[in-house]
Image (cartoon, rainbow, N blue to C red):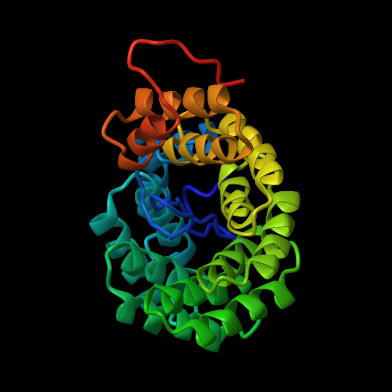
Amino acid sequence: MKYRHDFLRAARPCVVLLFALLAGGCSSSMIHSNTGPLTEEAAYASSPVNIASLTEVIQRNPNDPQAYNMRGTVLGQAGRRPEALADFNKAVSLDPNYAQAYANRGLLYRQNNQPDLALADYNRAIAIDGNYAAAYLGRGMVYRQKRQLILALNDFNKAIATRPDNAQAYYNRGLLYQSQKQHQFAIDDLSNAVTLSQRDSEPYVARALSYLAVGDNKSAADDLDSAVGLDPQSVTAWTSRGLAYERLGDREKSAGSYARALNINQNDESANAGFKRVGGQLGKSYQAF
């Protein structure tokens, strides 16, 4: 499971969540994006060949809401949002009780920064299926975006109660706890997310930020070692790792980590500030490991 695409073909979403490290401290925030490299599976799904095949299915079955939902899913993964929206609109017009299509359209509205429309669709999906974990998760993310944190917490709780194996729900609830400086609760939830989704770097980065906040720098460094191994192009993971090793007093690994972040984005303010703090010098080589 990856966090890059959360359109629903079945009942399980994947959520795109990235982190921002604040200079002089640590915090995480959710940014929803459809950019970034695709997984092999998602790249195939959103390929022109696959879209053409789904279009042929629709031509043979013009009144099949599932066909429109499937093509809308793939178009959304390909970043073709207006076309995806048209397909989800068609799906719900053909089947007004199609919870997945409402949830997918809600995601699209959320990506387009239309939270009220997203809420309406998630509410509709939940009214159709009161145990739809993906819809609770999506609605909770909208509530979190709107700073309605109690409502967000309730939805994440419901998503977890309905689907105890839902890594994304633990992840998002962990971020909510983290934003309220309840770091032990955040660490517990993010640990569950790591256990359920061991190939993704984001839960490791998030948990590391809470470890840094409570002063457990060694655990933070361990998590960030894992994070950069899983995603070597993550500026945030490298910068956070630089901070962890800086606090551990390992200036070599710290400078090496900040340098790796700057090699990816030379304008990153946190990486530049950290590199200067540990005495980093341009043109000098540092060992990150």
